[in-house]
Amino acid sequence: MTAGMEPVEVLVVDDDPAVARINAAYVTKVPGFRVAGTVHSGADALAFLRDHAVDLVLLDHYLPDLPGLALLKRLHTLGVDAEVIMVTAARDTATVRAAQRHGALQYVVKPFTFAHLRGKLDGYAALRRTLAAAPEAGATQETVDRIFGAATAPATQPESLPKGHSVLTADLVREVVHTAGTSLSAQQVAVRTGLSRQTAQRYLKLLEHAGLVRRRLRHGGTGRPVHLYRWNGPDE
Image 1: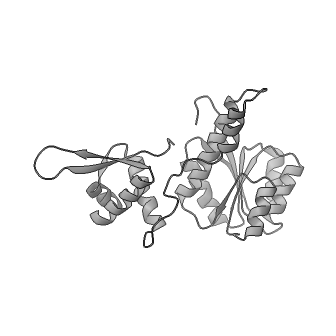
Image 2: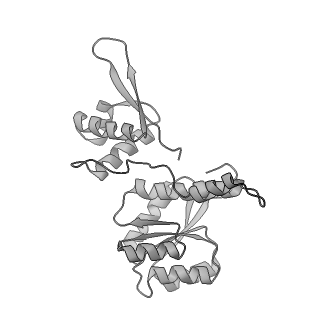
């Protein structure tokens, strides 16, 4: 988050209390974001938003009293000044397109990894920074392009994985390298993740190919040079 900016206040709306707690925990792990509240129905969401201003709503579609899309439309009708990211198991094209038409900023399909949700939150944070820096009037085309493009943050894991590779394993390796704060060898990553050195090496190469880690050789001493990997993804 840019220095001087207030934390992003987030409302989590999900009919399942356990899922809501998990989503809220994910949000709190991202610097610059704070959970303002969690609710489990459309009515409770509307009541919360009447009394609290939030910046972002994580909205499930399957709510007990009304569909999330209906709540999304209500929020815009009521003039609620908050962006919405749909976080739902609904994956049919009609629902996705309707969410886009009604103003959803992003759409996350359950189940998802922390890294995937974090990428969407990073995109929102980039949009917020861009809007804060934009002039009040007389925006150039370059500024407009930045605003419309800012909601799509750089990936925090490879867009797609080759057959036989696990998203969860890729996320685990990514998290270890990202949080290390220093360069790691494949053996060190293997120790920290519980994977074999060969498996760690394979996923490190995928992250390198995606531009999320950079590799260098460490020479010196006896034996072969050691490949070291360091996080090269977006600052978070």
